[in-house]
Length: 497
Image 1 (spheres, rainbow, N blue to C red):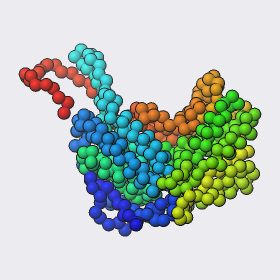
Image 2: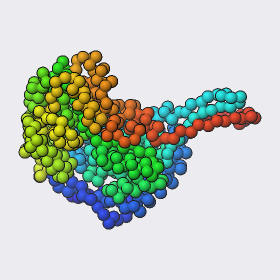
Image 3: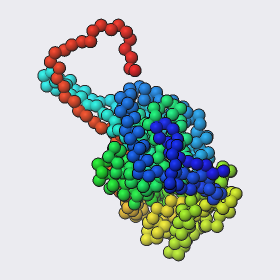
Image 4: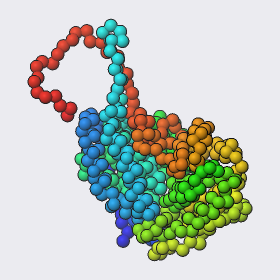
């Protein structure tokens, strides 16, 4: 049965009608599962006006009260994560265990935001001059916008909105139209946690909604994760309209394996990082750089492991689910075709995989290429699918140069038992997030997430201390009080309410 998915504005589902809609599919079966309303400019303006009004009272709400609601949201999210995971699997296609993992990583940022009072503290300098004190404070921006990708419909928004809300902002979020339902579920959790109406709003749509977010004068910042061309557009348009923008773009993450590495660990890691979530991760390993003496053995170990991966419906006993849409499946398949045509050795071919699913789902099995060169499209481009390319090099220096020469700089990993080599790599590689014998170096919530080069537009990374600074503005106050006074006698116990 097809469901109707609509906007969440001012603490409730929108009751209007839309003249434009999109279709939502179950990627495992190919069947349409829903219809989602698309917002026009007028509806976006209405939602922003609601959020702008709500921001006045929310910014004035005590930090203690805001954090107490954050704690309540955390508990609700934890108690109902299986329901949310099922929604993600139904619309994105990833297996249930991966959907649960996504929620857990997002929840880490919620928990980080529960400790935000410490990070909102200012500084104080007494008597910088006679009778003069100077202190700093941090205040919320107002209404902030989040534009979320399809690959992590719960986790990526949670990189941003917990910190934004805890800091006193109100939120307009535009989820991907491919898997929109997760954010509506989260909006209800916020309401159940006691969040005032208008603080968290979900607007569904396409480019029309996005463009209005980028140009609306009352939206003070934009947080975005997606492909590099769109990230660049988001950054340039948003900043041209006076907004703070953190636009996280694409990736081509390399994994350098040195001759002294544990090859079984490296093979396991390459498979896990290359094919988890069908490769639809900005932190997926898609290029394995093998030092020549161990390349043959490593490729054989990877191929043996890949042959055991079960592809199918994410609700069944599968290791890897489908791609998100038929169009994306066809795009990934075209890259595999190009790789073969350009002369790469296809070790495992996933184009004709037999998947465990009912109906015509959007499946491509794990695909492994060897002898890939840097001029091939399967190496140069972000494929965003279950395709792992092995590039052979003769030396560490050649491998390092290959990684540094690539225009993307999101994440990378090195596998070695040589501490000196690992330390040299972390200092010399031009990439924002680095794993040492760790294949997916996504930092914990109290550190910040983001890459270098064409993987990031803007100066501020997601979550951690950088996220707190992004969603607040600093003020410095210089004060002088010539006539001290007191407020009278009050023997009651002081409170922070």
